[in-house]
Length: 81
Image 1 (tube, rainbow, N blue to C red):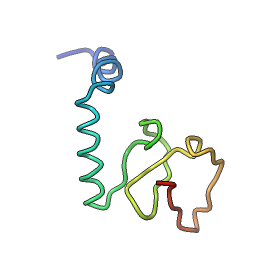
Image 2: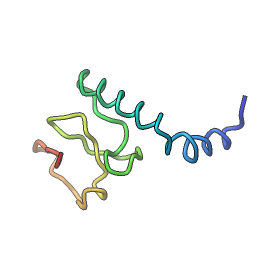
Image 3: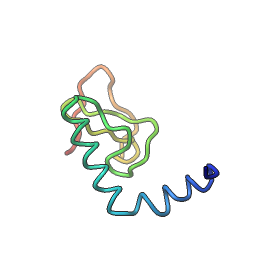
């Protein structure tokens, strides 16, 4: 058992920059696309939080990463991908 601080450090400093993370992320993205679910992290910055989801694919984004302040929730929104 490792302390939570070590686990967080390991994730951000060792695992996330590794090739294994990229492979796992791509596998999860593919499985989410097949299941119709959206991603849990922003496609641009790889962080979670308050995300907007594309209405035609599994991609999700922070408004700030797209340079937007707001979007109209009543209309469909399609990502730039």
